[in-house]
Image (cartoon, rainbow, N blue to C red):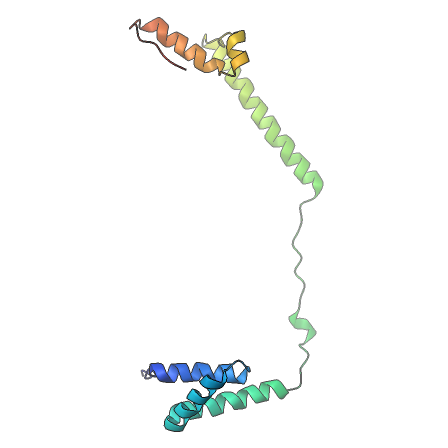
Length: 147
């Protein structure tokens, strides 16, 4: 079953009821609320019910929660030894992959390009210089390649 949606004026009045209970309603808005409550039975009932529940909650004695509700769940923290072992494993895997790549590259006949002092002094990547040198050796087009 569908419940009817209150009008905009009723929605504003119900928000004003909540603000009044919290002591946050201005004097002008309080007068507007009172005028609306005089004309609207639904909002009067809402205001009365909300006021009763608020009063009951504010005057109720606090009740301690049972201790069994609060069970400490501790997360396991990895020991420093596990962290060191993981770091060493990553370093070993990285180093071995570089070694395998170097050995496979040497077996295929690729040697690293010699670095020139000019390239090293200017911060130019020697791999790019070698690649450009290989391209220049394959095709002599007369074009200049700028770095």
